[in-house]
Amino acid sequence: MSHRTGSAAVAADPPSTLEVPPDIVALLALPGLEGLTDDQVRGAHCVWCKAGLTADTAVDFGERQTPLSGTSSAHGMRWYPRACPKCTADRAHRGLFDHAPSCEQCTDVAERCEISRALYRLVREGRR
Ligand SMILES: [Zn+2]
Ligand SMILES: [Zn+2]
Image (cartoon, rainbow, N blue to C red):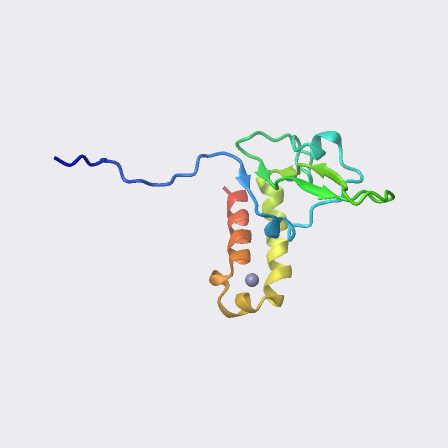
C-alpha cells in the first residue's frame, strides 16, 4: 500500500518582503548615505520618498556597505536600504533603459537576460 501525498508541491511565495539581488540593486542607483534619515538607513522608510514601510510592501535591498566620504575607514557603514514598490519600479524602469542598450543579450533576446527579467519584475511589482 503506497501512501501518496495529495497536494502538488507548488512553491508559492509568501506575500512578504521582496528581496533584490545585489547585481540588480547596483542598477537601481541607491542614494548615498549623506542626507538620509536614521529611519531610511535602517530600512523603516523608503530610501527615495521616505514613505513608511511595512513588511508587506517593502522591497528589500539587503545589507549594504557604503564607505563614508571624508573617512579613511575601508569598511564603511552598514545599512539596510528598503523602498516602496512604486519608487523601486521607477528606478528599475530607468535601470532597464540604462542597461539594455549596452547589453548584448538584451539587444538580441531580452527575455533571456536575467538582469532585464529581474528589472521587469520590479517594474511589474510596483504597478500592482
Ligand atoms: Zn518610495
Ligand atoms: Zn541585459
